[in-house]
Length: 128
Length: 471
Image (tube, rainbow over all chains, first blue to last red; front, side, top):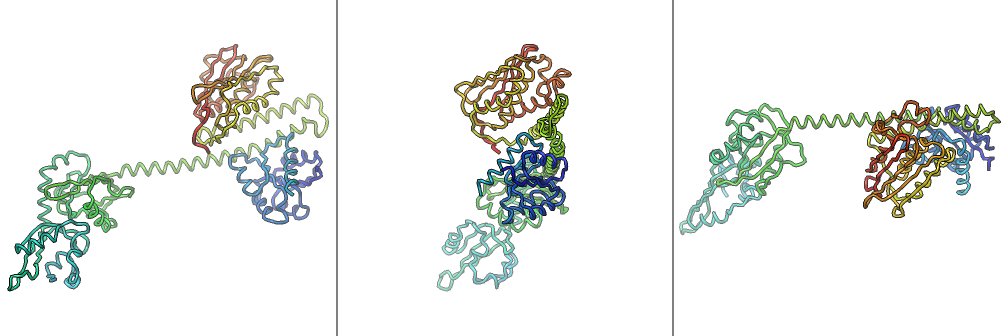
């Protein structure tokens, strides 16, 4: 289970490191991208099992990338979970509309975060 | 039928246009009820008949005529045809009608604040009070005999003729052009917005229509100023929303690093820590969480103050909701060895409120009670019915209590009582202000009863089932 590959997309280096280190501690294989374009590159080469997607990114935003991934037959099965500091009413609905399978707001709770991610991975496993 | 030049001038139809048509179809106004046949029979029987009536011209306007029917007989005394003579007495009719209403209504109409215009069936003005003359910019008496249409901007005239004959078909008091923007036309060609009400007036000379006309320029100006203001306010609101959303985003982003790394470190995940390191990391964590709490409360409060809280009303078990909140504060109660008791009246099971907001209300009151109660104290939650459709929830403690002079400031933003309590007890200073707003947004009320040094009781009165206004 914990061998699953997780791609974390975040333009903030500190927050990228936090999510990476917390999940790496649980034994996940972590891939990092600081923008949507380099994320696309990584997804093409080594498709992850789950993507933690920041929404506000320089260039293409996270929701646009999610839409593209969900339209593409080869990537639409990848679980996409929005991981964002946008916590206003309606932000979660917009994320789901774009095709996100889940929504986590920052600041994250490092104690429950790995469990939440594991639950999304399990849910994907159930569907397959 | 024979149609002479006089008829052409009066009605506007040439002989070629008129001949072959029924005279009734051509010049009798639509919906007009003259007993023409009766006058014709009378002419055939007695040789002559005459009456006055309104007649329709080709351009749609009406004229008032005296109609004479004269039978012409052949040599054997049989009626061969009828000579119909129509004499245009429109102007005479105006003067007659004017004389009729002048004596009866002039004084009365001069004393009203509104501009009043009376028109007869042909659409000619038979009386205009001086307010009307002033409003439309005419000299005294100048409007008499004019078609009322001259008081309308050109673009309305065509349809007005039709409306006018329609009105005489079914005269009743009503406002004119309901739902339409109406304009009056001054003699100098300028326009102004008006409101017009019409009422029929039955006189010996036939039905007249009385129009009361009000210049609504200033009202329109106020309306449009208000509308502009509203647009401006809406724009300002949207700007505020955008500002709040981006502020929330910008503040959460660094807090993620502060809270996240402090938590991860103090849990000892990257490696063992000594006690001081653990303590300081705990301090960073508490400060970070406090800041997060403050941001959340502030956003909530701003939304509520703007009246833009959407309540998600649903039926839920009050017992379960209270249990969940108690579970949340359990660690704090345990750490201070405070006894927490819950009493819910057996008659209260399910309520219809915004469950999250209800929990927020209870959580705020409960965490305050625990915070301001010393170790080994008591905190209680009591829920009892209040009348038919409400319930009362009281959170009481035997903590430090509140001074009488401080109670009034309790529900105000950023008013934590006693200098230094903030440091000692934490809290944002927004909790009770927010709680009150949340209670009020459910149509409820909050009250407090406290004795300094003895403890406090916070009571909220809420509906059992909040109606309507679901998001």
